[in-house]
Image (cartoon, rainbow, N blue to C red; front, top):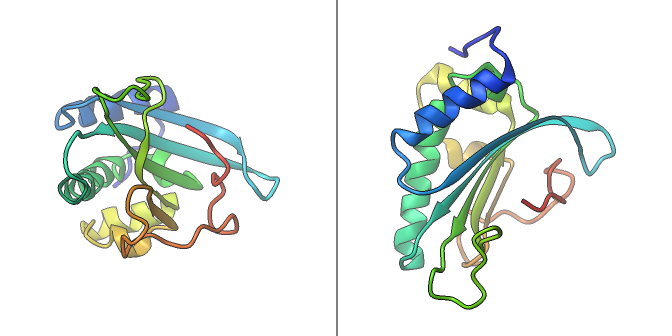
Length: 164
């Protein structure tokens, strides 16, 4: 059940505290209640960007998928998330030895998006293993053959043109 009547700032603090309890790397939580979508209207956009790696892509992919499920479980408790039009989880690769590594804009690895209402349903059902089938969009930027990668479509993703 989502927590109601709590300001977005307090919910973000609560979410960050929950995520810190199991996230070993850097992450950032953000919320924009009036994000311009690709359709020209405004949407409520919530996102978590997390650092993942280094490691072999298949191993890291499994870690990301496990983290996505844990993160979604935490997020489902928050009305701010469940009422968002778009909820994005973005895992970025960490390349400490690469000359092109920039800690302020690491390389994107896997990103996925859902409607907040889908997260609410998963929370009510207490089943987050359906996250792969309920997401609006999923991209594995390092493995274009990842079977979960969905065809890019601005129609499906209000935040498709966002650069984080």
